[in-house]
Image (cartoon, rainbow, N blue to C red):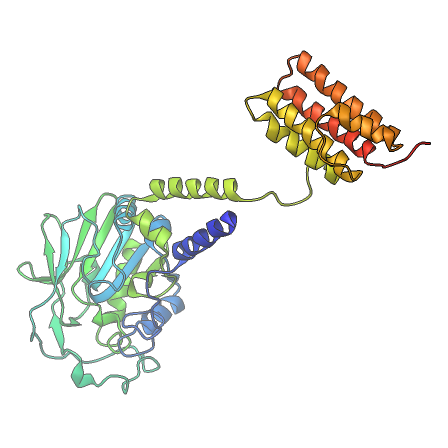
Amino acid sequence: MRRRIAWLLVLPLLAVLTWSVARRGRYTVPFSTWSTSAEGAKALFTFLEETGRSPARWTQDLGRLPAGGVLVAMGDGTPERRLARRERDVLARWIDAGGTLVVLGVQRYVPRGISVALVAPEPGESAKPAGGSPIDFSDFGDATERDEDERPKPETVAVGDHPAMRGLGAVSLRRPADVKVDEPGFELLLGDLKSPRGIVLAHGRGHVVAIGSASFVTNSDLGEGDHAPFFARLVDRYRRGGRVFFDEYHLGMGRGRSVVSYLRARGLGPPLVQFLLVVALLLLRASTRFGAPAAPLPPPPDDMATYVEGMGRIYARADDVAASMERIAKDALARIAARHGLPPPAGGAALAESLRRSGRATAAEAVDAIEARHAAALRGRPGRTALVGFTRDVDALAMRASENRRTS
């Protein structure tokens, strides 16, 4: 019963540890490279694929992000799944080692220690729309999914003096966030020095590219102006032969994060391992051995022998061994008398004489043997160990006396 209770307590614990605590995203979330809606980025992913730039979707946390290449994080506001502390540390080391982080419109994504932040624009900001599209992306984006009037109007942003922007026209952004940079030496991509909308900042051996909005790479806007060439130039300049990863995980897509991953992200990995080891030891202690026994078990003893063994051990626990022997001997004589239909005996000698007169010599001899065994045991000052043997001998003599055979 105790083992069953232990397993009933542990099974819910295992279920909790494997339960997903992060909501799985839908395939229609904005800025996802799987989405073909107006605000999706399927067109961008296909464009990079067809031009040989090796894009890939990242659908788990950033703990195993491969070295090098470009990581693109898109959004509008804070991520659906916020970065854990461990992920921020991994991302900071990844940039230091030579990776390039491209942040498009998503806030609170850049790791601490890098003085770049995106600040949401004030409500009501808008600008004139841009026009012209040299690339046909008519296969992407469902114009009926969301009324164009409900979306923020695009704002035309001037290009900076960065080499990736040379020869390109203006870029249109919808409700771009302000890009705040507290470190000198950044390069301007979009906007001006007073109000930058896009910058590049070197950090360690890598770079951080921050642009106030991801709208220019969505299905509805990628074909406008030079949006597609602009993004392709950024990728070519900074990926350095690596792949281009699109972070789908923090958009809500991909695999959910379990309780174990969440606790590890909070720095509770070692205490969790210790706790699981304690649970395993408790289960091992409470569990039974599976399979055949290591050695064959002895045959079960005879029922009477088991009874006698048990009674002897019970009497052996008493402090007065002599009194226990006296009690055992009297009980044996009473059993013999009752077996032969005689009254309770006053002593062993009287019972033996009565048995001889009735022609039961074997029973009389057994009674005399019990008396002699009792007297010999008392003379030897028996201990608890001898009491078990005395009980067996007296019981065997009592059974012999109970055979009830007459002699002429």
